[in-house]
Length: 325
Figure (cartoon, rainbow, N blue to C red):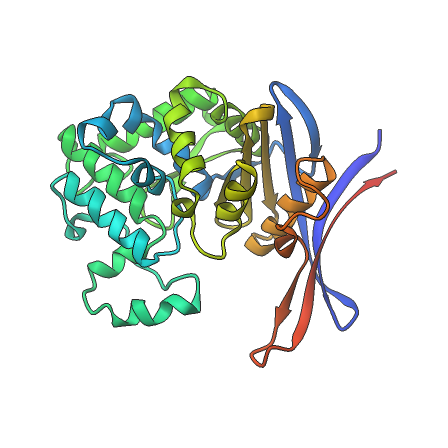
């Protein structure tokens, strides 16, 4: 049987400047529709874990208890841009839990986009700069949970905190992992524990997320509030708005999609960790398998150019999938 190979070329001056190899898994129910690369090697879920981290929150009914709105629930699963709307909503979540930005332990980072930099620089309060952090919504939800259960606000983000142990165990149960060999725990960029599973398991987790009862309110919050999962100029928001597919990126070249209406889960990992290549690859595989039309509006992420500071095109991203004999 022929083996599929996939990746993204970066073309500059008519030559391949770099090549980003991809591993891909597409599942429908329990059946693998397509796979290539190393699908069994453990990879870090990074931010693709966020929807699963929110499961205990809704299972406990804390969204009802604290009056968390649908868009705020979505923000708890997001990797948002840090736009004013996102920052205001994070503060709203904190206020509902009787918390403040001082309680956040996510730290802060420079915004993804230059057009937000002036707002970031203008914010003189170092604590408030944490609201720009793409994980601040997740941390706000964790803080409410930790306070409600008396798990300790100062240590809510640490691996040994009861909150993090509960989340870890619930993720294992949901994904269906019992062996320690298939589940490793590390630390994410925002300081909370993160989890390593196989790419195949990750695709299966997103397939399950799209259909199970315990995640219904979470996926509805995403589908109804796509701007809160990411924001302006983000592929996740545009894919949800245009096609009602649940899309979630992770750092270091991880990208996942759930198509609830077709019981589909897709997971992509770029070996070198290039996030732009992951976006290019996810659109390529979805077009190839018929989940997106050839003329999809998302082609701006599938084939895209890199420009110089003067606006002159310098390089071009080109995804590929082919069969090797």
